[in-house]
Length: 181
Image 1 (cartoon, rainbow, N blue to C red):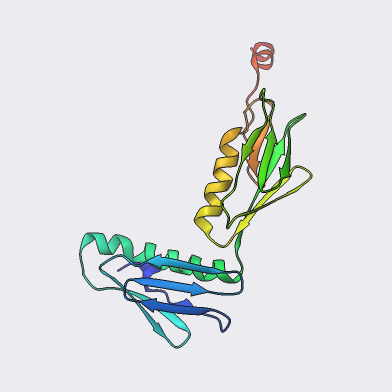
Image 2: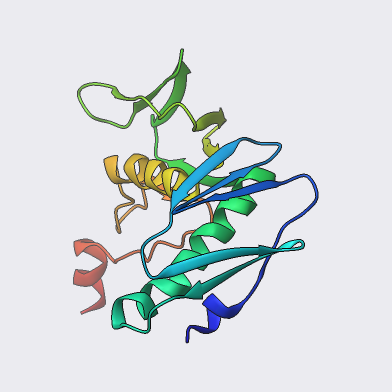
């Protein structure tokens, strides 16, 4: 039995959780999320807690048990607090701006890169920091990875887009190697 899957999910008073057949719907102050529960897994609501249980003892349900519990826990956290990721732009002349709903990035390419975020995702820019927020943890993470993937930080000068607290290992260039040998 999964150690994570056994843990109960605490539901606060301002969250509404509804379980219909193979679907769980969570609604809170930030919004509403739905998830289809896979077969072999059962979700029960007792008082102010949700419990995720296996109905079969197959390998597939063992693997899904902890995953489903984590996904439902993320749904509950998302509709109450939401999720945010911060990206930092480093490099001379690299900048970002928002035009309408689109994010426009100038990253040293011959053209600006235009990204349209999904409707549930909010993108804000303050100086060289891009803040991505939303209620769905997966969508927030995917959007951050998509933006970072446009210009990953390079190892020589560290220019590019990185996560806020990401450490980039810098390499010595050819000149530094030639002097040291």
